[in-house]
Amino acid sequence: MPESPLFVKLHDLIEWILNVTAGFPRTLRFNLAEYLQRYALDLNEQLVRATQAEASAEGLHHLNEAGILLALLRSALRISERKGCITPRQLEHTSEQLRELSNLLRAWQRKLQTVALQTVNGPTAG
Image 1 (cartoon, rainbow, N blue to C red):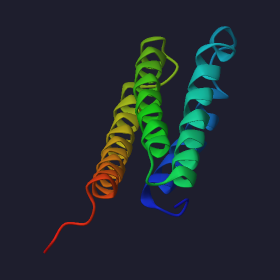
Image 2: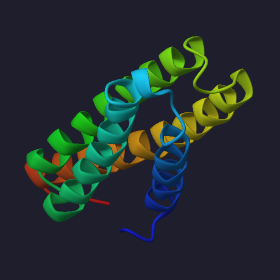
Image 3: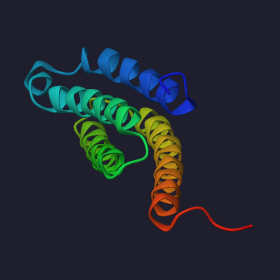
């Protein structure tokens, strides 16, 4: 799964976050920048864990945690823009990246939920 569009897009975002936070003002580098980096890397970790757990309640748990981390990233990026660490255009671009990631994440969650239901209910006659 690490070659999936979700991971490719996430790794691009992580690389961007690591690069841009290196230029944050010193007063924000050890809090806001660190949070952005941590949220992005924790998001990657949750998705890797979900690939290992795949079609299970544990997999869904990791995907739900990933959704929370996406929301935290979105919030921290808005704060970064308000503090002048990133431009409005950068915020707009990363917000679009986060929307794409969120859509891919929801599709994965729906897939796992469907598989989980089929496991519980058994195969459908058809």
